[in-house]
Image (cartoon, rainbow, N blue to C red; front, side, top):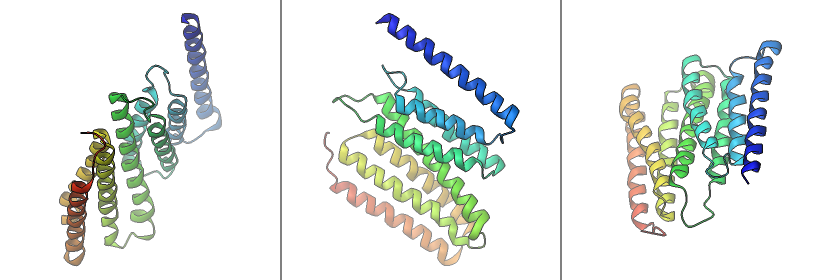
Length: 229
C-alpha cells in the first residue's frame, strides 16, 4: 500500500512538473496572451476537482477554484480584458464540478470540504457574473441604459435567497451560508452603489424589488422544513 502511494505521488509530481514546463514554453514560444494563463490554471483546477486529489481528502480542487475565482475577478477588475472571461467561465465550471463531486457518500460529510466547494462556487459565480455583466452590458449594448445597474443586484439576491432556502430544506448550513454571502454582496451593492448611481423610479423600484425578494425569502424560509435540526 505504501509503495502504491509513493508511485502515485512520483507520477503526479512528474506530471505536474512537465505540464508546468509545457506552459512556460507555450507562453515563450507561441506568444500566447498572458490572460489565457487563468484559463490554463482553471483547466488544472477542473482536473483536480474531477480526479478528487488527494483521494483521502480531496481539497486541492476546491482551493484552486477559490484562488482562480478571487484572483481572476481581481485581474479582470484591474485590466478589463475580455480574454479573462474564458478563464472565469472555466473556473465556474470547475466550481460546479467540485460541488457535484463533493456530494457526501456517507452520513457525515467533510465540513471543511463543503465550506471550500460552496464558497468556491460563490466566489466563481460572483466574479464571473460581474465580469460578463461589465463586459457585455456596461461596455457593450447597454452602456447607455442605467437600468442595467439593477441586473446584478437582483440577480445575486435571487440566487442568494434560493441557496438559503435550499440549504434550509436540506439541513446543510454551508449552503445557507453561501446564500447569505450572495445576499450580503447584493445588499451592500444596493446600499453603497445603487442608491447613489440611480434616481427616481429606478432607485425606488430597485430597492422595493430587493425588499420584496428578501421578504419573500423570509416567508418561504418559515415554510421550509429542514431534513435535520
